[in-house]
Structures are given as C-alpha cells and as structure tokens.
Length: 164
Image 1 (cartoon, rainbow, N blue to C red):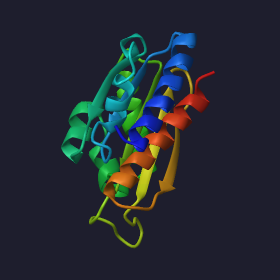
Image 2: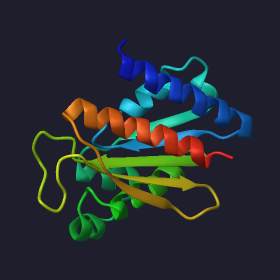
Image 3: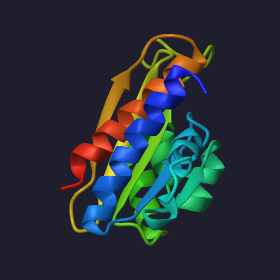
Image 4: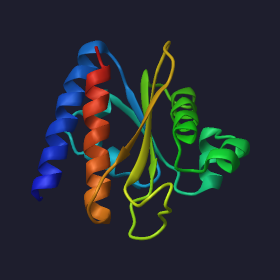
C-alpha cells in the first residue's frame, strides 16, 4: 500500500464515522475514477454499515441506462459537466437506499482533453435526501493516476463536509 492509498483510506474511515453517527448510507457513481472511490470506501472494515452501493458508469450509455442521465444533457453539455454530474448523483440517490450520493465524471488523461475541458477537469455532484443537488468543477494536475487519486480525495473531503 502506498502513501496515496493510506491517505485515502484514512479519509474514508473518517467519512464512515460521520455517516454512522448520523445513520446515513452512501452511494457512489463514478466515471473517470472507475470505482476507485467505492474501492477505498469498502477497504474500511465495517463499511457495510454505511456504504450502500457504487455504480461505475464509464460510458454515456451506462450513465443513461443505470442512472437515468438524459441523452439531451449529454448532447448539450457533455459527459464531463456539472449538469451530467448532477443527474448522475440524483439518479444514484434515487436508485439506492442511501441518504447521500456522489457522482464523479472527468478527463483523467493522458488524452481526451480539449481547450475548453483540458485533461484534469473533473466534475462532482452531491445529492443529499431532502436537499437540492450541489456540484463543482475542479482542475487537477499530474498523470492519470494522480488526477484520479486527487479526485477521490476531493470527493471524500467534500462528502465529510456535507455530513452533519
């Protein structure tokens, strides 16, 4: 296990404590991170008490089929957009027994970037039962692994900030 994995697991364990304290369960929807967030969360012993499920929706078809992302949203804004991330998070919450859901979609590289959405652009959205969905776009630097790890770390920190 390397330093990145250790740091992410520490963050996940802290999130688990907060979720359990509130009786909440988490569900995830991941594209560019390919299930890394769910893997980190489930590496924490006892996470079955607070982690419900994870969706890896790498393709646009998977985003539509599994999470209900609208074709119009993908066509107008693209897979890497806050609009798509919000629909992913809302779909995750609706298709789970969780009280909080997160979605991650981005461009981890090394290719696939554009001038408008360069490599390292990652969109996040959080859906909490009973509240409106929030979203954010971040720009991370580094190689593919570094961008993906930074995305997972950002997701864990933001989730912990949202749990009362």
